[in-house]
Image (tube, rainbow, N blue to C red; front, side, top):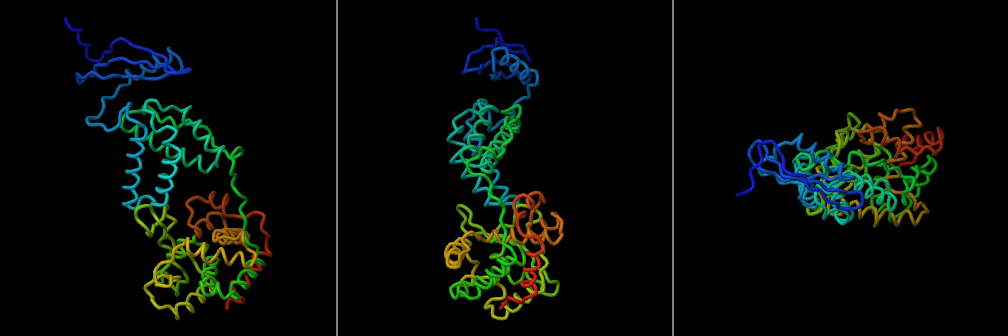
Length: 392
């Protein structure tokens, strides 16, 4: 005679086994109200804890969705690929940045999957994920650790939505401060007004820099605070001479499998009009008189297309900085310089964030404002540039 069937809404004998140090597994068969029998299991720090968690799971049981793609036994790596596919679909709809997805893919392949990819979803615990995040923080940086935490949180959230997890285990991962990180955030550094004038003078006097079309590009950085990709993506149609604004509408990036694309930004502030000082408008209007294609980019390549940011940095800018002794200055330095000088001029963090395209003023304050830059002297020195005294 066969074993009698479980009554609807009841479970069979609970079986337990030790799965590791301070890690127990409890499981049983449960007959749902749809008549089907499911194998249910939960882990705990002790035998009693595992049993309690199993009973709680049965008490709060939700019938699995028919055809569910994720279960407790699904490997973490499989769920991660599903999560990444969802992100790519969002990017196709313009809801996410392809650049961010490339970053997530890189961290996923190089850090996350080697560490936890072979675990089943029901084996993923807060202690395991917390240890991984802190390991990345201590070996690399807090920034990388936070990216890893975002990936883990996204993957586990997908598992929760499929009913494979009760709660997201990443929710209780501890703070990822940078005190113990190997690579700590560098102090934000900005050019002083005197350094700006000196650098512009050196740009104008350097034949190679002029040939590489750097003087106007650097002035554009200083006049707008735009990112490298934003400046290179700016087209003549974005310039409103009468209103004295440049309408920032895209950021040229390279995305895996797609080549060079125009990304419309990660936040609502990414697409924005930027007011221009008179000297910057004059510079652009003068430049436009010699432009070969008024439908093209303001700072085109030799073939009239959008310039590659890496080429501009590596082949033009870096050699110039070495020639003139400004090796520490990058294109982002100009962005920090603009933020700092606007801060010294009395603008609020919100106003500066609007110019730089940040959704959160805290980002502007923490990363882009060089608090150790000179005070009013810096703004007064830059005033000479704003008035056009040094522009040739």
